[in-house]
Image (cartoon, rainbow, N blue to C red; front, top):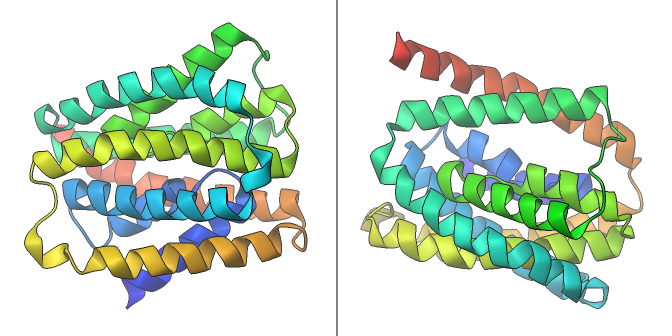
Length: 240
């Protein structure tokens, strides 16, 4: 029950905060599941949530950016997902922890930071975020840093980011599944998470215009930074 509640709040917060549910839900899922199981469970949940966001914000798709980001994202996602089997889980936790800590501190220190809006940066951002999504399960934060540089309206940003993430998830899930990351005892989680993701996306849409975006985002970033410290600690224990 706590796991499913965490999934719901992650979807609501991810929709409102603007950087995806996996950034929030994956660290929480790791308190309940091993890394590989969490990776595929969160991927399923993420794809359901993005279906909801595309449905609720469907009039805001930027097709050019979807192609520029999406193609390199899908290609590098395949490489990242295939590498999961060859890297120790605790080391992946360390990588995830460092990534989340750097992301949260950088976002708090320079909330207005963005990359130059160019075709080169769009392709680079798509490639890097796709690789991270395949390897450690969350690349939305980096994708967001590149996407925000294009000055998209809130609704267009949410829908476009969701469409790109949908392509990434549809690419990595079959690889994770084929690698045996999802045991049969977790199969019933999938339809439950589908319902939670749709309800969470809908709830998040209702809250987008009612909650002060910047204050809420800062609160979430601080929470992510604190959670990341645990994964860094676990990873360092493994290395030592």
